Image (tube, rainbow, N blue to C red; front, side):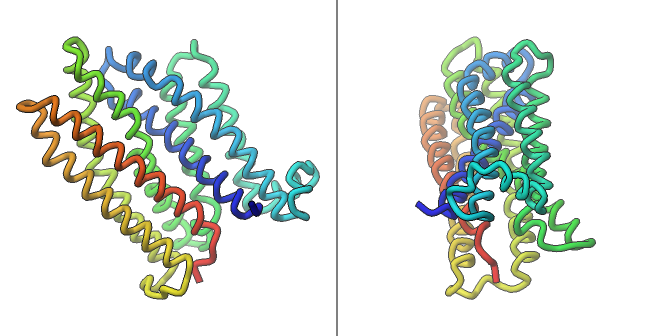
Length: 294
């Protein structure tokens, strides 16, 4: 496996972990009603711990791999002198703050006695997503266009993180609908998720279109370009995901009052499909983000 491939995989796991932290924080800290937050958070405790751990390891891993890519290969991945050189680059200047935020997230999550811990995780994960808009293709322009691109990419990442990161907590939330004492809280959370989901899906689509337009500055018609090929596959998958989300909201959610068991079973299946598609999309993005769009 080449270092370039390893970087793509490390980037993929890092994105997935950070978005998962964001999604759990939103579901438990912002969408869940009072009295339900603790139960939903406890249910996602292991997932959050795993996500924070993966985010921390892959943040360091991306720096190490970048050192190998910048230096003489695998032997320089653990060369601290090369790490320091990487940290002086444009990527490194952003990554220093990214590593600091990752360390803060790790410490905050380990301090289970800390008041407002979930909101702090929400803020740190938001910062981690924002920092991703300051490197790579999102940072290719300067001036007003550069500010527009970075702001647009930040919105794209946050809305995508809401969509993907909430899927696993949503599956757990569906289980609470089977208990009489927690059903009202779970349904209230699901309704809030669905309402905000309209905005998130719309933002993913609109900011994605604008982001591609700014980067390419042309229609994606050059099918000989690997970047364009992967981008078009991503677009097709997002279209399918959007269709699944619309089906969930307007066909399955209305079944809850009359056929709750059937509705919850189908919602769970559709959510699992969205989760798989989301992972494929993130893998594609992690890949073509390392390619030249020209």
